Length: 562
Image 1 (cartoon, one colour):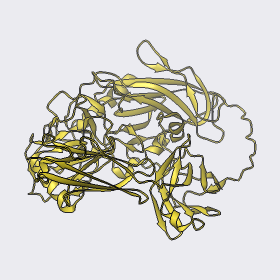
Image 2 (cartoon, helix red, strand yellow):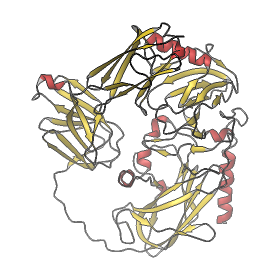
Image 3 (cartoon, one colour):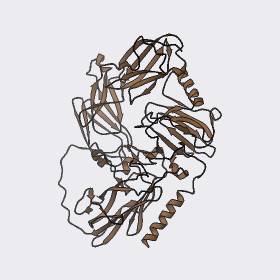
Image 4 (cartoon, helix red, strand yellow):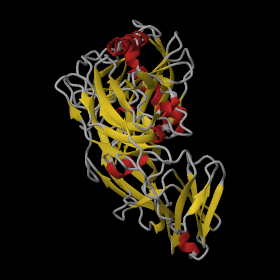
């Protein structure tokens, strides 16, 4: 019966993956066999991945085709995030997204550059009218690239519904070969009640996995009591790739009855931040591995939970023999199974020693302000998922907030009163986060009167720091006074090692020129095909400003014949 039940749910899963979405409407944006470096809804830092990342063989410049007929509804160019991104809305109401692009197709590129020159800015967001940029199915709309927050050349591809919710593109028939079962790397058990334990342990416990000859994992019998839950570390690999990608579904069963189902087929951007409630955030911060919790904690609003009985938690009673089972599936239905025998056994737990501390109690539903001398933090209601105690300490100009491995739903406001500083020094001060190794990182800082304020979604250590040096500006592919007739691009390096580059402006003979900024290489690049340089002698001026207002200027002359 258990086999038939599993077979039934697998059939339902596969049939649901096919029927609700049009199957022959969207075609692949790359005309090559698809290999993925990232799958839909896989676990990323502070969010679920909203599309699929298609490999481009480590190259840029592959033709990107429109997945269906439609019109360009949005274009965004930014330093980070999606880099150069194109949004095409289709007659059936869906929108496809193509990101990290190197360049847009000529008619789109011309439209974008005209707006960039009009507004004199590289980063831009545009919303063309329906009739401005009509697109045919399979039309080349861009070249693949590595712009924005990409860590290597690839195409990020999404399909969104009318509510702007991303949906797994494979549900629409975008096919990727996968005959490999998901991988299971770790199993953890969690006592969730006051008197709960696992093998006499009252905190998270790592459980040893045993891989059977039939490929089904099991464990040695656990001795447990009370309300408990489980978590796993798992991922999936498609054929002919080594990337560790996300899985498509996780189901758990208690004595043959379904306890929880997590379906990674669709989510909203608003809920994506709650990934830090879904994973064991403390374990991730300390070990850089994401445990997926197979139980639903308080204030977890994720829609990925498509079924739950008692929020996925199970209750183990004295003198019982039970089995907890986990099925991990990829999109093609390849399944990895785990069975955990559990013996109900009550044990007297040692009483917890009373601790005396100066921790500040935070009630999640209430707003709170914590203050010490000239430093204070403002915590809005529902910043934390649950009530907790914080270690709030201030010494000189350094603030310490512990424990740091706690997820936040909202940013906290960190404030420093700086009236003791000389007015000449105030303009160069900023709030910095301090890493475990003592390195300082600029946190976006605003000044109002004698108060510096920064907002952050991370607990940890913050301090006042100062940036007294302007950015570095250097010519990259030319020298002052050189001829550049044979060069297609003009490249300049810009870098600020302390607070970072905030903005820049470049002109030739007094006219603004578009220079595309790539933070990964710390360079700005001008394409001579823009047609701005049309005289023999050209005077280049570049001004770069950092995040506290220090500016540097670079000037050079070059010669060019068109």
